[in-house]
Image 1 (cartoon, rainbow, N blue to C red):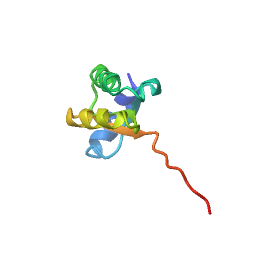
Image 2: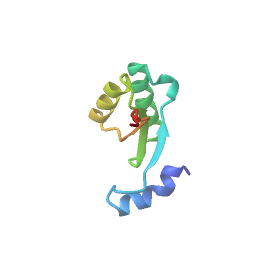
Image 3: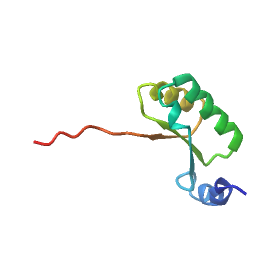
Length: 88
C-alpha cells in the first residue's frame, strides 16, 4: 500500500479537495524541459492514482513542462517559487 492509497479515501470523501500526495521530479532536471515532462509523465503513469501531484520546479524551463503536464491531465504541484526581496 502506498501513501497515495492511504489518502485515497480522504481524497474521495473531500471530492478531490484534500488527500493528495506529492512526488517530485528530480531537481537535477529543473533546466531541462523535455526530460522534466518525460519524468512527470513516467511518475504519473507509474503511481496511477488520482490523488497524486507531481512536483515540477517553476524555472524558465519548468514552465513549459508544467503547461504540457497540466494539458495531459496531470496534477501539478509547482515548487521552487522564490523572489528576490529588496530591503530599503
